[in-house]
Image (cartoon, rainbow, N blue to C red; front, side, top):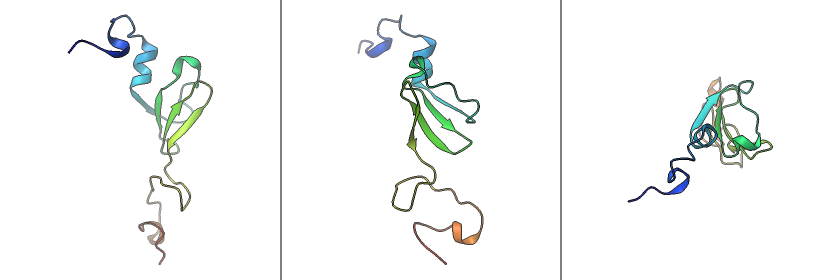
Length: 91
């Protein structure tokens, strides 16, 4: 199978495209600007435990760690027995 996509010409392997194709991670303070050169960059923000994606002007949250009760999201266990429960379970 011949090479396809942005890497086919072997001239489009810029640092910007490589960064946009890989998952970056770190704190909110260390996150790059959501500039036009970072469109598509995916970033795991360890400060808030969220997966974010640059749209060129801002960072969109792709996977929220602690969405509202009716919002599908990841859940952190937190502290205390009542927080380490599945779904909307209460003690």
